[in-house]
Image (tube, rainbow, N blue to C red):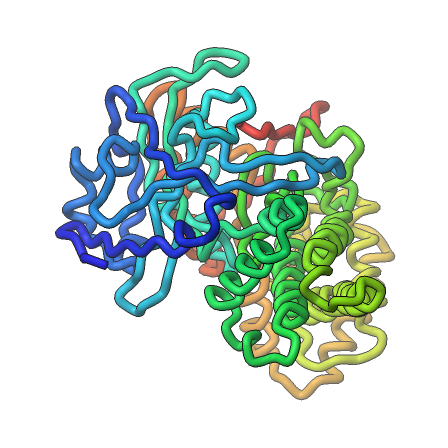
Length: 487
């Protein structure tokens, strides 16, 4: 590894896996790259020199026109269940430049999303439009600020070229940073090829990269399954606690590292409703907000199936071992979710009746169409809930039971409010505000709204006066909000 002037310090361990897992390929150059967003704080943590990269040469790197020294670009192969149907996939428009080794010796994938066609493109053009790349930059950084494990965005460049979707749209490339891009679908791909040694190599690589303590377990592959289940249970609970709807929880969009990945048709819920769906293609509600924990369990079962040849030489025994681990997922998720909900209500200890109290509030919020984020914000600030819910006898009764519950614990009122402020964001990326910012950027080249929104979302627990206007709900509409994959 040789550190370059602009801070790149690449290793390429993924490229040392069997060739079946990737195709070596450079990005396809673009005509006129221009840097429109650069993440200074992320760059610093990666050991990159912002001053060098916020230049024409830097834009050329983020567009794929210049390959940094030490990089070994490739497209990854994987498979996946998309809306329940299995298909062979792979990075159709993403190029992994390599793995940046940070000053702290951490390892992160550097990937260009929209970098051109690959052997896995399945007829696609390999490109990306500006709007979806800005959405991923915005939402992934908001998720990071909320304390939710996520891939992050280092840069967005426009390409000077148009992409054809329903209409002609300005092209762009996003530089995505991830602990890795190893997915459930990566293991499905390996298992589907029927080469057990390649599967074992991938599993060993994943253990070394993400969960090295598993190597000391008597059955390291069972330990890998267990660790992945634990991380996904914690992750999905965090989604639910802030009202985040991923939108497309296919198995190729579930990372083994436990990071949120792929911000296509995602959005945050306004009105509380477990049936909330934003994705235009999720017509049956498979990936609705309330279904996310169950889909995560389903996806993990597919991961366990892929690992069966490694778990035990006797298939029946391997299945039993896998089923035992998978059966524990929902309990782990419930524990994380319940602990998080207690914190949102300022509850420090556990009582048997807490679930009833929590579910009672959620049922009332659903019945009276209360805003999810603002309801908890109002409770945190001891303000009246801005909803018909506030005027009901049922809510008054709930408040009395909640206050009685708080008085049964030893913590002070100040401690309670501090816990609630740490657990309830004052702001989230409101869908109408996200759309306004994206439209201004894409249609008029005006990035002021996006910069302002990024600044507000950078500290969602600040409860500052500047955030107040970003708590406002969208105008009422007869049309449900819909998002699109943006491919």
